[in-house]
Amino acid sequence: MTNNNMMCDLETGVCGVAGEEEMEMIDFSQPTKKINLYYVTDPICSHCWAIEPTLRRFMKQYGHYFNVKTVMGGLLEKWHGGPIDPANGIYGPADVAGHWREVGEHSRMPIDGSLMVDNPVQSSFPPSRVFKIIQQHHGEEKAFQYLRRAREELFAFNQNIGEASVLIEIVNGMGLDGEGIVKEADEQTGHDLLHEDFALTRNLGARGFPTIIMVNEENKGVKIVGGRPFEYYVSGLTQVLGEEPNPTKQPALSALLEEEKLLFSKEIEVMYDVEKSELNGFMERELPSDRYQKKEILGESYFTITE
Image (cartoon, rainbow, N blue to C red; front, side, top):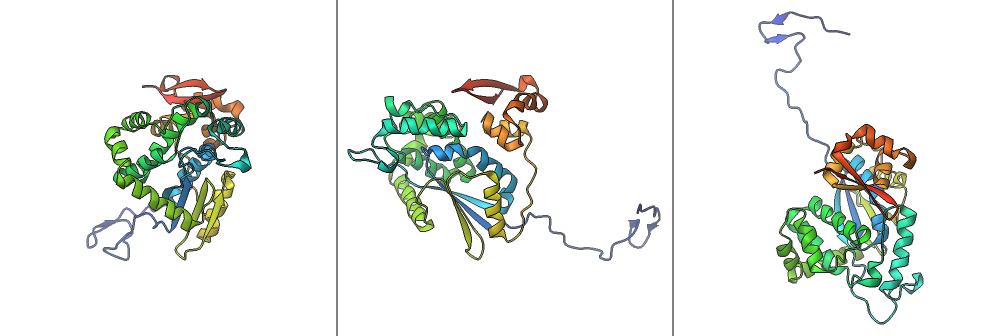
C-alpha cells in the first residue's frame, strides 16, 4: 500500500511514519564465509586447464559462500629414465604431447602440445614456486591470475613455463617484479612454501589433479576429483552448506573480459549458457565491435579487449 502520510512530526522530526526505535544498529556486511574451498592443482595439469570455464563460473556465482585456497600439488618434479605414468602411457615428455592434444580437443580449451616434443617443460616445480611467492606477497587473487597467464602461455601459445625467462615475462606482464619474484622463488623460501603445499595436499588426501575439496565449520566436506559439470560443484556446495545456495548474476561480459584480458570461446559459452553457434551474435549484442578483437588458434576462437 502506498504511504501518503505527508504530515511531519515536530517531536520526532520524521515525515511519514516514525519507526519504533530512534536509533538502531543495522548490519550491512556480507554473511561470513563459512566454507573453505581447497583447489589442488599444478601449472602443467591439462585437465585443470580444461575445467577453467566451469571453475570460473562456479567461483563467480557462488564465491560469496567460500574462501578459496589454491594448493600446488607437484605433478612433475623431473623427467628420469623410468616411466612417469605408465598406466597412461607416459614414459617421457613426448608422450605428453598427444595426451594434451586429446584433452584440448575434447574440452575445446586449446592445447598445442608440440612444445613437449621440441622443448619440453622439465619440471612443474619452478612455476609452482613462483605461484607460492606471489600468493604469499600479493594474495590469492593475484596468484590465481598468474596461474591463468602461465597456463595460457603453456597450453595455447606453446611457451615453456619451466624457463625463468618465460616466467619473468609473465609476471612482468601482471605489473609485478618478475625478476625479483622468480629469483625469490628459486631461493629457500620458495622451496619451503612449495613443500608446505605438498604436505597439505597429502593431508587433504588429494592424489590426482584437479581436486576440489569444500569443508564447512564442522570439518565435514566433499571431495570432487577431475573435471565435472557445473551442476556437480553446485551440488557439492549444497551438501556442505546444508541448504540450497543462491547464485549471484554472472558478471557483464565487458567486465569479465576487462578482468581476464583473454577468453576462449568455450569460456564465454559456459559462463553465459550460450551455444557455440550463437556465440558471434552474443558477442555483437554484448560488446561494441571496437571494444574487442577476435582471433583464432588451433581451431578455436578467443577474444581480447581492444587496447
